Image (cartoon, rainbow, N blue to C red; front, side):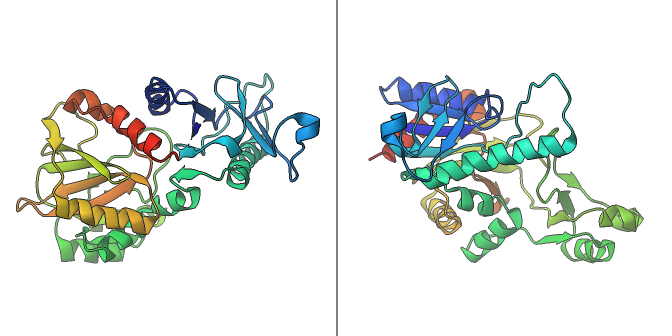
Length: 316
């Protein structure tokens, strides 16, 4: 059995579920944002099979089926931290909402950590650590991949000095927030920006990497499937009406990326690279659970099937 932990209506989880089930394998989705309002999670410090006919832990699937995490061979830790979709008629106080969200999230994660004994895709602690973009940049750099010269700061003085050192500079969030995407932007004339604007919170400042060839590298275990996105835009995400094609991954790049993912403890990852005009790959970031399905119709690469292959290959 394969379990996927994600939010309600996640198209990636649903599509992969269909692909795995079409091959005759059991696959269930546990909706992390639908724990509240129904009996979704149970964990016992001591199994009580005689009284309850179940093991020490159970979770409720998106289809209302109660399953035991102990029986799963693979757990896809897809998206597991969404807030609860609460439907109470009376508006709850902020403190009550925080309690429900934290306890639902903690109970689900703790139950799975205590009961599941199979293969994590990828382990929660590694996923959380690798999501730290400062940390992953350091790991990529130490693994022999070029990374942009980077400054994380909230000091205008530091930002001004950095831009004078590296030249053209971009700015983007350190972590980001739910809601509309905050795209990468140029930062010009930082001297003209009030000091208080920098001090609100740290941001990531990086040297601009010349070139128009962006690589979206989908790493499923040892298998890699890449797309080449050709655009002059700084951030390719807002406009996909540009040339996008399959890109064969050179073995030296594959080897270095595998080294980074191994050091991060990730079984999978969606990596963004950029090629310089001379063809040198530059590491931008890895999303431990990045989006990949949007590339299927653009490249004719059956990524959903490839990912199903990957999950099934991880089962005993």
